[in-house]
Image (cartoon, rainbow, N blue to C red):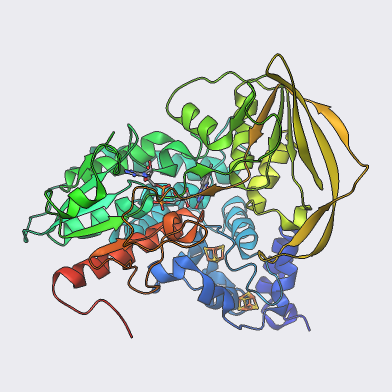
Length: 495
Ligand SMILES: Cc1cc2nc3c(=O)[nH]c(=O)nc-3n(C[C@H](O)[C@H](O)[C@H](O)COP(=O)(O)OP(=O)(O)OC[C@H]3O[C@@H](n4cnc5c(N)ncnc54)[C@H](O)[C@@H]3O)c2cc1C
Ligand code: SF4
Ligand code: SF4
């Protein structure tokens, strides 16, 4: 039964307007307030006082007048974790996005800069990457011409905040203990833990294998989605607080893991090394010139190199990395960019908003097919032999298993094949005492994030497998709390 008629006339009008923008908004009327969205949301874990999707959506029906200024509206990180848990399959991030656009475009929220200021203050109390968070969360259209009033308003306000932030001086945090903490990896998990711990008086060093800090925020997410000046400004503030970041220092190569606890005398370690190992297709021709791995390509472009791609590019995979690689290939001059995905649109792991944007920019997505062989001439890619697939029963991931349709083979022409079928962590630098799972992720206590080696904690993608920035931030915060307890002699293990 629809709840629309229960609100006042303004609520009914507004919900109708929202329904025109987001098909899922209509389904909101059937929300039975089960709370599964709130229970599964990583943002709720970080900002429990400011974000609660279940309560927020209820307010839509009861007191719409205040909705445009509700903090909740501006904090959803679009991670889609709630989607699979909602009994009605509601796509809450899309409703949040439409509602945000609507309140700005229709003038319900006029003072965007003040609202952003308020949001940033809330974020800054809890996390170090407030501007990164806001940028990824609000997704302002990055290219000219700006799409609408929403993009213009958000971009203008954000630019102003970035300038203010760059000018702001940060005093170093006083060191109140002699404990030294080593953090391996400078992605959002490592940076968040470093920020939390340095503010608690610890001596914190972050070891980073690459030449620049930031993890996937630096080398994965492309510049057109997250300007690097935003990341640089936030990392500078973390360093100003007193965190030392040693780049070009891969643990396992430049320094051994056991040396951190031994001669380097670190009293606790947080492993936040992410998932940077690209999975291979394991098909004939994969080692030819013109076959590249998506993460390698994105990394090169993000580190200011200009890899050369051909005009006809095929991307194998259906996740966020595939979407970013496709749009990056377009920017590198590819004329025809096709994504080849072995399941259907419904099973695609990519964020639907990213898929939509890729398609809008001219990327073609072909479902239910996979390459069987990369074809080449003189060791250079010239195409791929593909086979069509059908879907069978669900596999261990819960998605329907793709089954090849024998006899349906066909070939496509390609100059470059980009492999984007997933990433896994590299844990080869760890000592045997640290247990890893069959997926190569690190086993941790789910509450404290302590590994099987006392005093060593782990979190972010290296534990969860590829996930999201907000989940990595959450892990960094939780690890810092556990390390603080551990070094202060409090019990870390929970029964
Ligand atoms: C292309 C792409 C786009 C994405 N887009 C989004 C998005 O829009 N929104 C979102 O929420 N999430 C997105 N993600 C996911 C998100 O970036 C990750 O989930 C998040 O960065 C994980 O954080 P982390 O700190 O665990 O690891 P990472 O960010 O991966 O950082 C790990 C760091 O550890 C370093 N390291 C590894 N091994 C060693 C070693 N032995 N010694 C020293 N340093 C080491 C690595 O070089 C890296 O800098 C995207 C991911 C990719 C690949
Ligand atoms: S999309 Fe993510 S951040 Fe937004 S409500 Fe759902 S779980 Fe929370
Ligand atoms: S999970 Fe779905 S039904 Fe349950 S409270 Fe959230 S939106 Fe409503």
